Image (cartoon, rainbow, N blue to C red; front, side, top):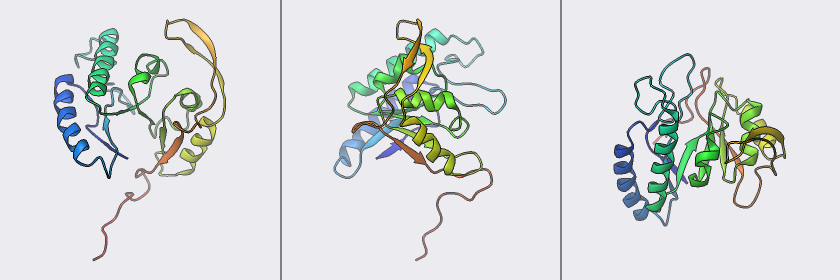
Length: 198
């Protein structure tokens, strides 16, 4: 599996053009690779800045979140109609109720891998979820997150109808859904690749 795409989506038209080109490449390499389009709508921020298409779809500080959710869901549906699976990072624990049924692979980023809320969220997602290693480069954080997400959890959340409820998850560990640690360079570690000697 290879996940390919922009850092984040801010222009749905450009994202669809990219998806059409990627779909052609995915078909070309289908015997060797499962190509998944990276369609990230939320941006984690260390301080402040644009938080992504869902949070601020006009990129102007107007925070039309309802519009952002509609745009995100519509884009995912169009990409799915092309036959191309999508990957996205889940930051807000409510957002998955609006888009998760159209996502094939979920990601939990380095800033949120240690978060109990995100581990609980992943335990209820019906897709594979990748947890990035911590910002310090430690892979143990991601391994611990996977172990937690495989377990059943109880927590408050919001239903698809927008009603607050108590959820119990089965844990993310079925034949079609599981967790993985994703290795990425940390703030204090070297990159996760090096030149191959010839």
